[in-house]
Image (cartoon, rainbow, N blue to C red; front, top):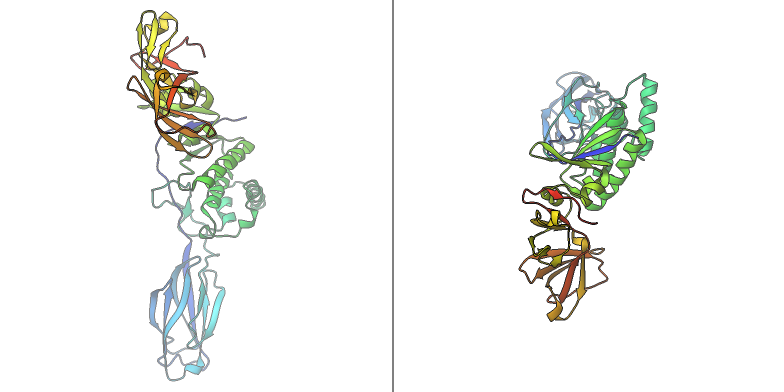
Length: 399
């Protein structure tokens, strides 16, 4: 099975553009001699795009204007002529289909639609800000199904089968005829993935794909899209600044510092066994404490530690993950730390502890053991790693 790989970098993204095409107002006169001074304005989304239009002297006369799919089109500001009873009109979309009709004085209209616009030859990329992986076109159908089909290969029937397969895969077959502005942000992300999978690629680059979504939706989409990509067997490079996203989404991670790969491995390997001080801080939370080799033991802010001499003599920093500390309530004369802060976040409790040595550490654990500010505690490290003066890990510490 192909692997999902995470790179923690920065790139840019694109957002969608709505389909746009010409619409038509047909001005009809039953007598055949025009509107005899009557005029009307055409508004699109509340803005006048045509003002004072009229049929000069014929049974039927057309005027054109541009509108996007879904725009609100309204006839307004009617001015009376000599024979208003002879006047009628038709509003037509980009395919020439009548979407609304009426007579003089009707303040009504319809919604813009561009079903007949030809698929474009070029992609339009706009608003390079937040990454949503949405590529749209400067003209043409932008319904969900067409958007996915555009990237598929094969005959028309094969493309349609591929679109149906992908819509089922992302659990959105009911949105096949919807426009981009008619679906939610999470649905747009699923459609973007379906579109990317349409040509059956061997590799997909996903650049901050969940950055614009709220917390719960981001969590759900991470799981769903990961399963979709694994189902298709597509290798994926995810670019992200979110550490949790990198750890939960990928099978393997690459950590890059100043353009160079400094560590590669599974998320668990990198988190549990970082090879440098930088890596320990970049992935997950870490406490760094100064240490010194004296009297054949490693002197630390937590007390003496027994380590092999070849490790202890070169150790300058010890790293402890917040969850690897153990707190014990003890009398003040037996304590080596005092609780200074308590942050409760539901499933996890984070405790700030000031050590007697002057250092401070963050401890995380079960919320069921409630601590209070100024509690006296004995703090020990159940697991730790040591690093030398260059910030590189020293191997050989029992785990």
